[in-house]
Length: 167
Length: 352
Image 1 (cartoon, each protein chain N blue to C red):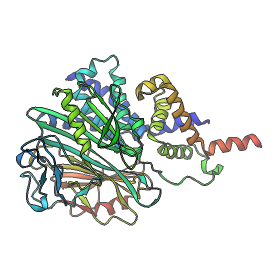
Image 2 (image 1 turned 90 degrees about the vertical axis):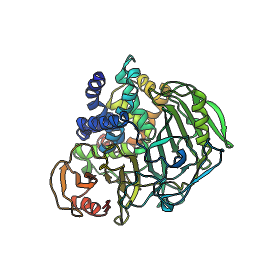
Image 3 (image 1 turned 180 degrees about the vertical axis):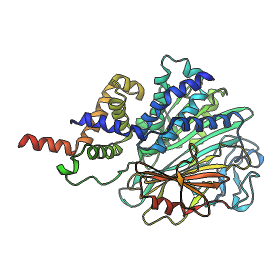
Image 4 (image 1 turned 120 degrees about the horizontal axis):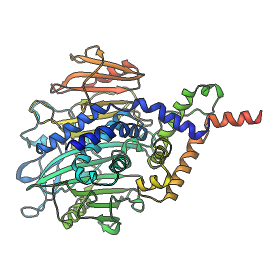
């Protein structure tokens, strides 16, 4: 199955980055993709015969994240307290803003996070996201809308922008 | 910077945290090779019965479609040895699953069982709620079935999503459900059945690639598994290693116990990982014997008389305890101070 190895090696960096964005954790991303690689091997004759095996495997990672293994980040859990109120100084650096955003992303429900990752990291159009998630485009837009509203809520950069506008 | 650009930048900034490709591929290859060489039978017990309990503290009742169709009560490890392959060394305390499988199809079983933390109840915010999953490979007479059973506390039957095919309504022991059956392909038989306390239970049965099973067999198997799920769980799985006396406020938020990947006699029979934390925030420390890649870093302080390796990757600390389980290492990792990793490492319960 040399073609399996070639395909796996070619796709793996992207899949691992994608899984990292989904799960938010290196160890869990490794577990998730490892599971997908094993399943991919089992079903390789069928997968390799599809028009877009890369998209098929991306879907496997997505489904894995949304189903059990995935249980990972489904843990409804916060990764730390958000500041009661944002102060401009706290977010003066881009680094601080990204760290804050990473924590906010960790709080999203899994489907919302998947939509955000697919839209803003994989940069897929909504109709392709809908295809990957097996839902309607309207559902994708609804997830994205809710996610962005959650991510924006109390976000410092928004407050800073508002502050600048009112000066 | 607008919100969408900040999201993109945040993802880009985290790309460096992705795992190493070669290590993940090598680990996957080991699992593939292990499967190709045949399934071990650590869970096979007398008379063809199968029990997902090693070192259990309670009995597990399995209904089986064999013999006289009588329920069998399988004695636990506490009552006597069941498994000739069980490790000779004292095992760490069993880990209890949130629910049990009261029935499994006949055959030997390779398994992966995990418990996860899914937050806390509204009435008791300090008490974590747990969910769980069993991933089983059941082999009998050359037929290989893959069984996945998991609890979705957050997914109702109405939100069911199937791998293939539309769903149709079904009733399982008085509970509303929806099922989908496709005789071939990844879909197999899928069933979501409502859980009395909310959410749903998901059962998926399919034939392993290269194996075949009649569609009706998959349906019958999946329904029967669903009918016999038991709450609360009494099934325990024995980890490859344990943890004792965690520091204040720290809990085992999640665990994952998997049948060993390496079939050599010296290798551990199972691999185990834990996610530790308060369970109110994301787990902060991961402890695992399913080590991906070779231990790296510089020699650290000895732990329990064993050599260690330590590496700091931009604040993400890893501490390998070498020769921890049958010659294999255990890694303790997290974005925490190095001293916290040593503290956890010294609480590992390792086989002697």
